[in-house]
Length: 337
Image (cartoon, rainbow, N blue to C red; front, side):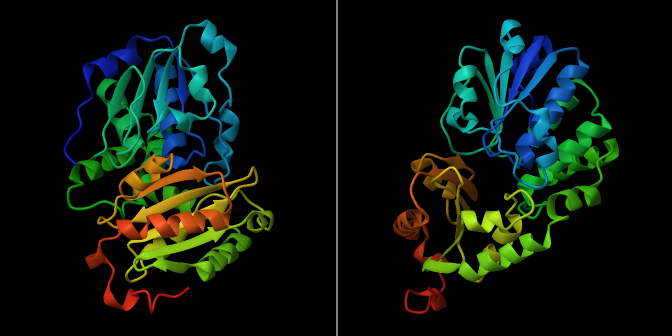
């Protein structure tokens, strides 16, 4: 990634406004939440009103403590003040849930790094080459001001969430590490960030990880699939999201070009996450199914059952895996399941 310049119109949008509704996507992760919190902090420091909004749920253990800072609806006082909206980490307006309709009449800036999705908003600062939305927020703040220690800690959290604590970065990432160094200089603690993202999991959560691995099966050469049920959630004493360990372990399996993980939801239907090697664009697949994301990490919602989504993925994913990418030992006769 080369250095990313902040367009003048983006900086002007944020420095001249007096009231902002700061919106993130449904089922928020650390990058989304941290980006919202850090940007809202910066806006308030420069004297603007800032209203944090998200439909949630905040059911990932690493973000659970932040849930009470967000409203699931747009506060009336925000609309009365003729606020502008800033939508963070969303590739489509639908990803904001019910908030999308509520902010439709507001001037809207979109700040995002997803490579797939549909364009929306009046002003867009979308940079797919950035590994996280948190990095874009950092660059916006740094253009006008210094980061506070609290903002630096939040942005480090967001950066590490979407980079898998930097393991998704390659030899083109010098500018990212330079930005990360500035976060540390401003007060971010990498060790504490790691513990927030990957630590403090219950014993029951570790046992669930074992069941998820036990259920893993080859849908086709190069395609691994596993799932989680509502009954699994009922056995947990903590929020249910937070599956990076699962993706890391399954992506490390020899021959695994795509990993698909389906979660049965309490509200009905399923949510599906996809991870892939560089040879497969799962963002494009998720977009076809009403979702979105990155080339190597994406997701979507599904209204049917676990059995139905397993069947759908079994039809769609194999065609996306290049024949050369699936090694000989993982042909249809030897793949488990």
